[in-house]
Length: 102
Image (cartoon, rainbow, N blue to C red; front, top):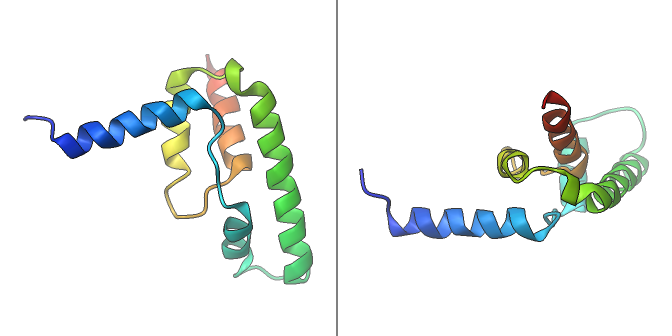
């Protein structure tokens, strides 16, 4: 089966994303969507905590990015697109699990 031009374009963008550095996620949006159905703390406080956790995870990813393998990045980054609420915490966990599994 021949590879379509759109497949080449999509996959080449993935390679650039994986090679360049930590992807950019809209964590405020993701946190609001994730917390929309939760109870407990006030939504404002929960959102602030979520954003703080995500920022901390992004900083940790940035400092450790070069230690993660390209195949692990190629596997974990697209997984964060599923469901529409990407998370640095989840990405960090995926990459760490891949590293520990080796």
